[in-house]
Amino acid sequence: MPNSLATLAYLYVDKTVKCALFPLTMLSMLATPVLADTIWLKNGDKITGTLGVKISNKLTVKTTYADEVKINWNDIHSIDADKPILMQLSDGSIVNGRLIHTDEGQVILDEETNTPLVDT
Image (cartoon, helix red, strand yellow):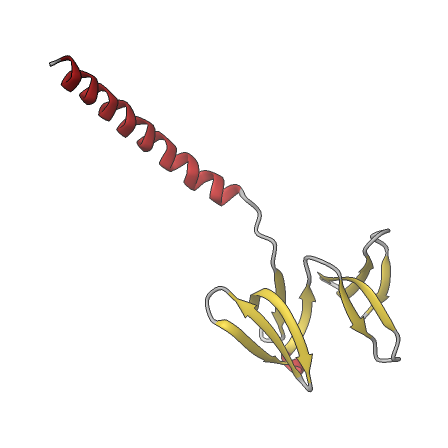
């Protein structure tokens, strides 16, 4: 009999702990920032994922909901990159920085100093 009482007490405590941990786990997942790149389209839509490569006139973005998406370069308004990327500018120069979407347009920030390199 003592064993079955101990088992019932253990099951009750185990169930109580699981019931308490589930909401805490869900809340912590909501509070965790998710780093991702955001592509703002000219039509107002935005696509969130990981920037891939730009080949010809298409930018590849890997998303969690549709695998790889190819976007026409001319349809992109601006890009918000969560980490620095190498970019070739229209004058042929290559810069390493973060792309930031602002109300005024696109800005490339220097990764070390966080100062604007190029306004696009």
